[in-house]
Image (cartoon, rainbow, N blue to C red; front, side):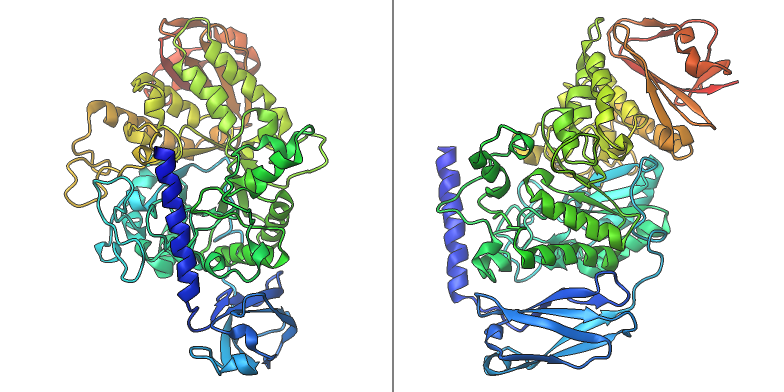
Length: 628
């Protein structure tokens, strides 16, 4: 019955969208990108002009020093013109007036005779003030803006938008969180040791419902107004950078929302992957690299729609490809983005992704990106990143979200209370596969996110497991990502997904519990939050944890030991996942402990002489800085 209801709902949505196309006008001319800059490496750009009957124009002219019209063409839809402009290095900032001649230039209501295209001066500080890149020295905090804090109730509902919901008691409706709410609490993130903020997508989602997550874009060049719009997004970026923090933007190239203008009125039919009837992706990445895969499976992986409400984009269309690439560059330059998280990486055209990544890196050499590759097996995950594997296709993606270190690593270890240590052995073996990556430190490690059960629930609400996971997260190789609320034991099972996307305590006036002030938190919640703050602050100043090498030792029973070290510092990390205490002989690790006399627990201050064994309690982890 549920599947039937879902099918009917999807059909109704598509019928509504089709009806809107039939009676819809595109209105006054819109231009994409909305502006560009002088001095860019992308100096020949595609400009799309969209408006009622704009494609009926018979001529295009412009007269601006340094800017030349390379070519222009129409689309199948009469509401588009495509131009290619070349911007010479000596061009000055200003407004390019694009003149349209012929029937489409003024004979139709709402279509102007000229279209303004601004050229701006680039901001200074590429690679130092913005586009700095995200690396292992960072600690990422990942949140959903709608669910974190409401700093401006005035933008909770925007007149004219399809979704007018606002009800915090319903997990599928909007709750009102916004950029201002985040700005108001950036100092809290600083207390945790956070250096980079990643939010679910901030692009407009003018869909009828389920707009809280942000993954169904409806206009690439509009920042979601219910979060505060472009001005507040820029303000948030500036506030982060002022505090020495970085901004990560969530990119979605694979699909858009069904109410996006390129779905309601596609320039050409091949901008979307079309099927005779609704065809969903198989949500499998294996056919992409499987040498034995059938072509039908490969096509379904790459071209099937993500959901009925999220049509699949055809990135092999040259015009769409350029549209997506330019939008990515536009976001970095407009808002000072430092890093790029790429949604559903496996389902994109991988040749397109290489081109897109390369275009961003040519413009911003220090920018980094990491992709969502939810797949089983380290080798298959490494396929999508820069790797050491001999395959016909080679990815240029710097890093991935490290699902393998979670599913086949720390999740197995922290939950295994046996003395045999099967779980820690899985963690050890997964990390031993790091040879498959060119740079495993570029991978983003995590315990949970918005698409899976929260870590506390995965661990059956075992506080000891929560602490072990967090201590591992903040000391392991790679770039740690902390999902909002994990630091205060937020729980939730991902079926349905709304249960793992609940409101952060204290983000709304009148909340009886607040993670910001500690009011109403339990002793366990306070203890875990303290652990994150203490270790997060320590990590800020630990060269070994931020950028050091890693050495791990084969687990003995439930005891797993690894080191983070460099020329300045050595940190010993010892995990005992079993219920019983274990004896740790530091002499086994002489290769790394040589020259030191004691280990100081960075959380408690306890000192442990290295010349005598130590008892590591069950269900606990030590992080020891080695000292003379």
